[in-house]
Length: 249
Image 1 (cartoon, rainbow, N blue to C red):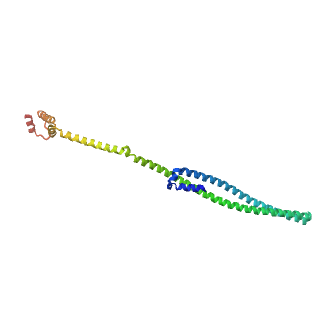
Image 2 (tube, one colour):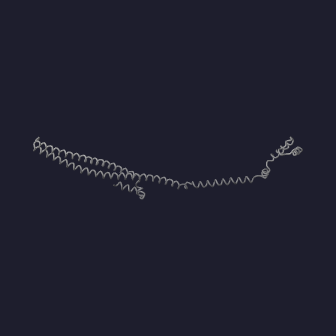
């Protein structure tokens, strides 16, 4: 069938770029599968018709065989009645002969029907085999179509991603990120530089104050000690003599 040759060419589409330019493999495969399904439908219809003829031939064979037996029984009955004197012997012979002739005709029809039945049943087997083969091919091509569609999606997605990746540098994204890194590094170095300058700008007085502590706090402590001495308050761990000396002072 031409459809099989066409589908075979579709299966080789990747190796033939010219075919890709002229025909869409997916659409071709879909159309091919539709054609196969139409052929399958026609084959199923033909199979049903041939099966019906086989059944008809079988029924006809049985019917003709029964009619032949019936005519034989009638011929025997006629001869018996003539023997018993119920009918004229010559008339019985004539009718019995006609009955036997009809018997032979029906036996011939029954034999022909049996032959027709055998032929029809052979045709049924062939058609059934073709239908099974056709169904197998349809299933195979449908699976191939699913795989082809999936590969097309993956290939399209991969192509788009690679295309976007290839356009990154042309858009200056990488260069812009590098400039941002340089700018951040520059700002960090400048901040560290200002910190060093601030530390170097501290005055000598600041260093002295840091070394001796808060002078106001020292003066307040001395005033507190004098006040306690006037009131006669002795600090814990201080002797009475030390308290008097502090008071005299």
